[in-house]
Length: 178
Figure 1: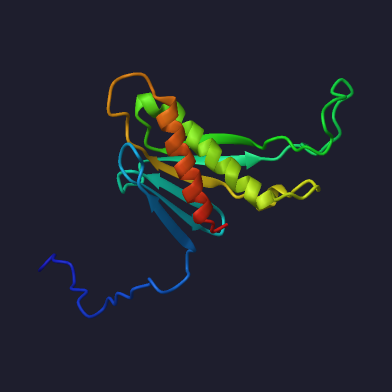
Figure 2: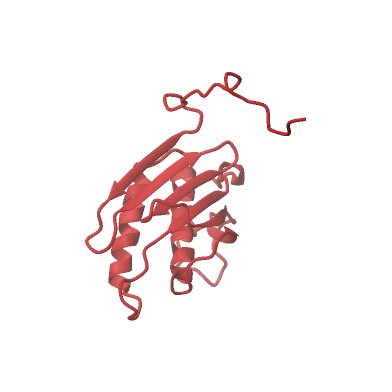
């Protein structure tokens, strides 16, 4: 009696789905003045958004970012007489690590990127409306990060990191699938 698995030859058909819009996907890449090229890919699913930011062509560390809208459009409290009543507060973002861990020296940087990405997307979805937006329009965002470490063991260079973050935000704006 043979225990070999039955042959699937002729039973399985592979169909390329590259020309369909099953999952809306956009991707953009750019060269950085220092370091590797960076690629941002965004995909929109029914229940979540996926944003991949990579310098290695890999998914890297996955973090779920959930944006929460408070009563940011409410009247200011009495002791804040000089605060404009129509100026909305920034949404709050909660982060949950899903898979992998960032390099120790980039842990805060990964949190910063996930928070900025979630905030930018939520601001796009909310828009300039004066009405309190619906929380239901804000899907959780899965942020996949694989960023290059600093080439030197020196202190974190804030100006270089700012250039990279600005570039990521520009690429994100080009990859709007939400």
